[in-house]
Length: 376
Ligand SMILES: [Zn+2]
Image (cartoon, rainbow, N blue to C red; front, top):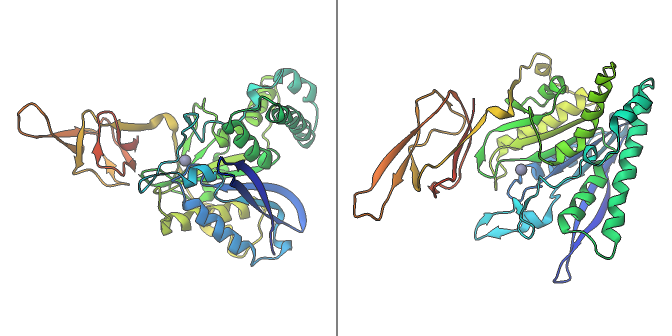
């Protein structure tokens, strides 16, 4: 099957050039779920572009009858951040004009809703599908008000325009997958939200990080939070419900690299997840191992970052992916001074046992810069 391809103008630049988004839509023969997958929201995190490319290649080899619902693919979803450089480095994690992280700018309906408890009460006896439809209309109605602001003569800053454009593509999706990687060197894993553990393992990644708290307006969270909130209000009213709505952020290895292993694992995970969900009917999937796959899940609060206690050069650092014990040396800082003394070497050791999931690309650090991350 072939996708329909649409190009959406995103930003008119001072030079007169226009940056755009391009959406590849694969529409199945049967109606079903809408899947939205994007990559490269953070400028250095490019591995997901290869996953989307390979998905586009793969989906062209199947028939429309093998797809239920639709899959929307948006590679290089943030051209501003993909293109920015500081010498040889991709430095596009932040919108430098507004000083904001590109993945903390999204619109969360829960923060704008009038009275969710009253809404839950009004829907308490309805079928789940009816509640979903009614709630989505409310979300869309509120969301449409942003466009009025954008089109007003005073306008809005670019991050609000950008978040509106991206979210307008996925507000009505059922499953959302945001493909990231580390900006530094990192492992392959995913972030998941409450009550979605059973689905998480079908990505077949080594581990998952559960949001036990989340006050950030990330892309995944802004999408799913309104639905989680409504589930909670229903619970308060004595009815347990769970919408078949899911949001995932995949971390695919190292920044500024298309690491083949990370790309392979990302692609396998997405295909396996979509086969498990019944969106794709493809031979060999879901993979046999997914039924019994045990994914280790850890709360986000157990991610511990180690910052350099002083400036210097990092040496003898533990390897990415290694397990460390409390008290074990993690790295040394080669520490120079301007006090007329000899240079020194300082040992830094682990506070607790854990797995090294992230290490800094730069082995020269100023005091207070990130050296590595450990998940306890
Ligand atoms: Zn990212």
